[in-house]
Image (tube, rainbow, N blue to C red; front, top):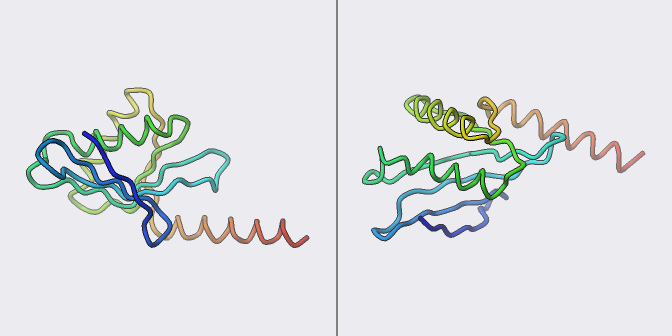
Length: 126
């Protein structure tokens, strides 16, 4: 499975994955350095219908963890039926030695960004 990576209009990154049959899925994420350690925040993951139930989503996340080996993978705002996917994918990654955290909501993420911006402003202007 190979991917193409591009910047998104919101400042994140998008990887589109394909195999010999064509596109199999995509993941939108950002690399976050707000905390004292680096996080990979997963904003959206999508697997093409014909590729579901083939572990493609988990493989895309595994690729990110390998590309950013000292980072912690964090899902952002998990929706209904995706709960079981995330439960299994995070358990697999953690079992294989990668760092994961529980889901972060949109409001928690926004609060972190505001606090970080305020701290940076204070540091730069005092």
